[in-house]
Amino acid sequence: MCKHSEENDTNCLGIFDEKVKLFPQKGLKVPQIGWNNISSLKSGLFEGVSDGIYMYFVHSYFVEECDNAIAKTDYVIPYSSAIQKNNFSAVQFHPEKSGEVGQKILENFIKGY
Image (cartoon, rainbow, N blue to C red; front, side, top):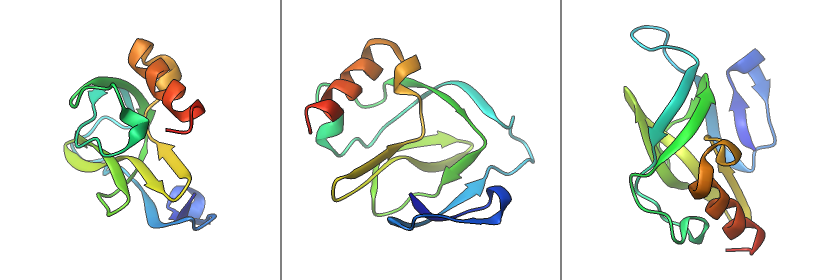
């Protein structure tokens, strides 16, 4: 849904005017696999979800912090772990692998938050 991805130097849909970047290989385990927290929650998508809760991630690419961020995460560098614009939402983590909290986020999404 972003404008461009460094993965295969791909032009994308452009719903979000953001670029998807590869995590720096220096000093980081890439891909990031495991639990990390999300914070600065700003959307009804996260109604009933505590700030700082842990979610499950598996990824090598990220979107920098931006105005459309509705959640942030830090993996040596801070980045947008969820973005939203109009009726489009995207999350970097895997709600389906994140237990009850992930289920709550999916329920919020289905209800149209």
